[in-house]
Amino acid sequence: MPSNPFSSIFEYAAVVGALTPHTGYVSTAAMERVLEEKIRLCDMLEEIADSLPDNIDKARCLQISSVLVPVVRSTHRYEEDVIFPAYTSVLADDAMQSPLQRLRSEHFEDECYADELTEALLAVARGQDIGNAEALGYMLRAFFESVRRHVAFEREHVLPTIKAAYR
Ligand SMILES: [Fe+2]
Image 1 (cartoon, helix red, strand yellow):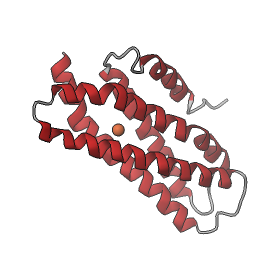
Image 2 (cartoon, rainbow, N blue to C red):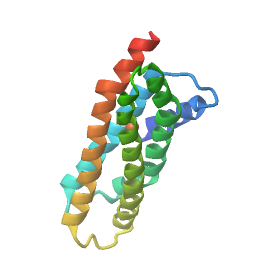
Image 3 (cartoon, rainbow, N blue to C red):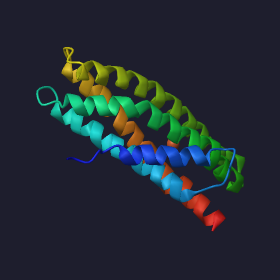
């Protein structure tokens, strides 16, 4: 029996649930896990984009449509409620706050995009006509390319700054 590719996302979501702002402690390990899960989602979305228009896996579309929004939102909440405040606290210069404004606004955009993608993937899973496969492919690529850039910035700048300050 094939393993469920999403099981770790649910496990992870449970972990994040325990780490939200009420507990408030900073875990760069949890953040790294957050980013890994987002990249894994991107890889799965890229597989779907590559399979268009004729080889699309409807079951995979259904799986992803059920986790995309919850994963994206829960990871953003953890970043914004726990990680970003920690990052802010170690930035000496107010001018350095601007990357956080951009990251927050990218979160908002990605959440809106995740909603739209979920609807599109659900329609595919239900067997509805894909219609313009090129448009769906563009939508998928715009999302995962944006998320990969965002994650790269967080890995290169946010995490190392926090690790250095909280070691
Ligand atoms: Fe982020």
